[in-house]
Image 1 (cartoon, rainbow, N blue to C red):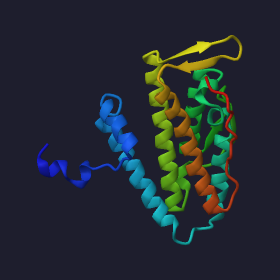
Image 2 (cartoon, one colour):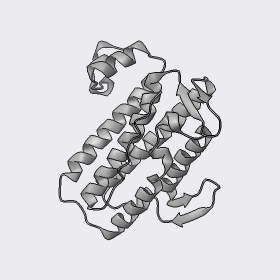
Image 3 (tube, rainbow, N blue to C red):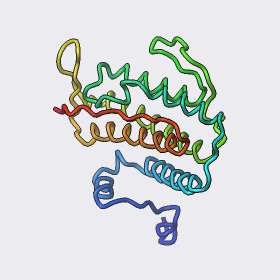
Length: 209
């Protein structure tokens, strides 16, 4: 990479001191492709915030769709800490089902039974809201990818019988799962606030290993 390319805007990403050190210390986990995804998501959110500063469309269809999406997130996979999930496989399935619901408008039970049908996020008229929903979907996909890596690399173990608890060997990874889901709910709640409808507010359980 030439000095000009290194200093170009395309190669820049703004990070706090803590995050920049975290990335510099682990270039395998925080690779170039992941950083570009982060940058794209951050820029997309910034644009959406600017656009939402203008008068927000009060389109009734958008509000109906948003209420449907809120229902899709009203599940334990977005409430419990990752260490308190009953089964990681069920957690992964819940994330996948939520992605499908956002993309297609089809909400299913864990067994695959369709319980409600609407429209996918591409039907949202308000551009800023649609972009935020796209960002949420990207974050959900990232959750599934990192969960697969954690499983393949045996980065957690289980304890107990019946109500199994998960112990992640990498505390930062465990925290990332929890904070990413919290951020997803925050973004969804910000859309709901702009639309004037009720969002989701999950109480966090204080228990930790």
